[in-house]
Length: 237
Ligand SMILES: [Mg+2]
Image 1 (tube, rainbow, N blue to C red):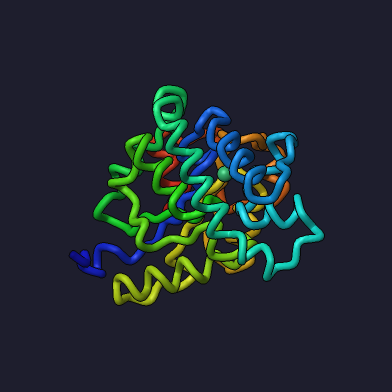
Image 2: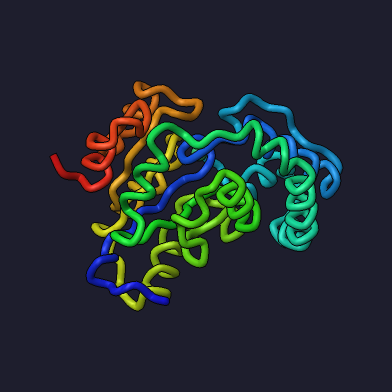
């Protein structure tokens, strides 16, 4: 059922890893296993190499010699293997994964009040698995949002997410209706490039100081202070 637009005129686009939750490195391990099987090699880089990037971008940067057409051709196989690798780690991800402080209260608060959807570098099926396994799927509409298999550039995911939400809710979401929440400079830049509000949280690999250098509209250590987080998201106070 499509909720009434009058109550849903804001669109909060949540980054997943480092913002809503973390999987204790298990999803990254699954992704590298799938990359290895699909492309014959997988990088072992520092955490910031992956953070904030789309899965397609990570593949691009790991295999620069790979033509775009070739990558797209192998993408379905990679996706199927990645989902399979995730399924094999299901119990461990449920046991070791964590929802970030304050996230649940905010998702619950905004549920039914605004539209909440993912904007993530994760391919869509993996985004859904992470949200489902850590108990957050009910709060986000994964029929809308934008994912790492939609485009390799994170900034291009913003208009995709806005268009999907506009079509789904039959209501045009303008840039001033949209809020992006994320834990990396990539999240801030992708929002800023489309004039949408950006809220940065230092629950991933970047500190408050690192994030502030990219001029988000608000930056928080984490989302545990409900009033502060709500104000940061809505731009009030
Ligand atoms: Mg992130």
